[in-house]
View 1 (tube, helix red, strand yellow):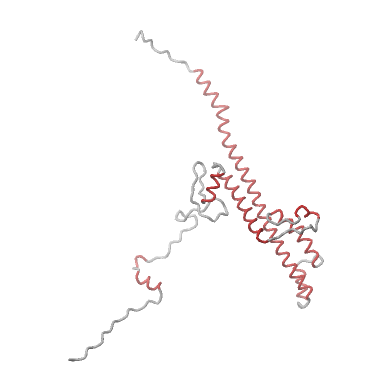
View 2 (cartoon, rainbow, N blue to C red; view 1 turned 30 degrees about the vertical axis):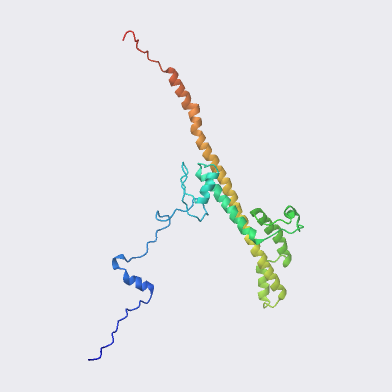
Length: 252
């Protein structure tokens, strides 16, 4: 009896990667480039109508309000009495969102006005925390401005830096002044930027109020036209109408 040969099983070739394995398993007719819908496509979920809101819009309120809102702004729209003026309400919500973002950015910085106040214009704000645009501007201009002028005799960061470099970057005094001015001017710029966004929010609130008033006027004009013109004509037509005589039941 001859010796049997050992049974060998050919192992399948292992794919280089999962991508290669998937490409090998998918037929050619099902391969293609991924579909990327362009911005604004109906295939993409609609964004919330409130500018600056990053959430997806789901709810489309009834009536003349055609914009889609996220769940949060939809609940706020209901709480505000379901206003029909969508443009005015959206503008007001945009302003509130901007002001809220400014506050959320300033509050964690823990910036407080000195107490007691070092300058007369800041006495009403002594000890208060900087949390809004008005306070940010006052702190930047009336607190940081004079403080930075005292660092190097009114010189700016660029001027002190140029002197420090020209002197071979050896002066410890200029280096300290340079660091202080850089930090102070950076903070001042950030505070003024927050104030600018707060101003945009205030303007948006005013625009929202004007749009709501304008929408109310547009709603009132047709009502006034009916009361002053159409209603008197209708009453005059009714009064001039001649009633027809009913046939006599006895002669019928």
